[in-house]
Amino acid sequence: MKAIVLGIDQNADRAASQAETVIDLFDIDNICAYLLHDFADNPEGASVIQVDAVKRAQELLEDAGVAVELREGSGDPARSIIETANKLDADAICVAGRNRSPAGKVLFGSVTQSVVLNTDRPVLICGDRQ
Image 1: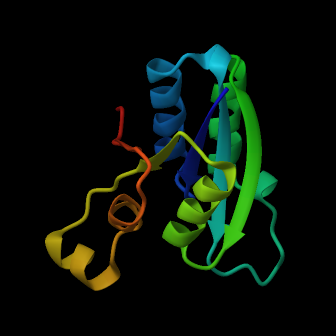
Image 2: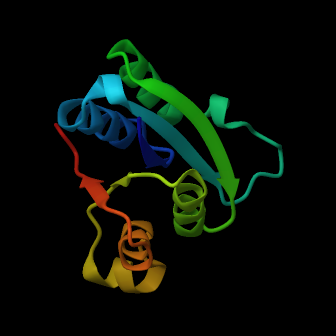
């Protein structure tokens, strides 16, 4: 069985795009999708099952017959994605890109860019599917 780690942020539309892309590109009978949400700041102790974007991706994947497991991390999202993929020996990582200005990328960094540059695993970058 193939393992794919989906780094899910707070945006339900991006999470849906990631789920739909995985459904379209992979043999759904032979994969397990690990949905990872990283809590950069979580003083109230929220759980991954409370994140609407995670729930949306989970619903789409499970409705298509994909095996799904939920994971959560804390701190730097890119590091959490890479560490989770390494721990699971994932076959691929799936992240969602965002439209940002060049200045925004320089000032705030990019989780997607960091994941791509710091892993040796294949990285699938999904855009909006509107």
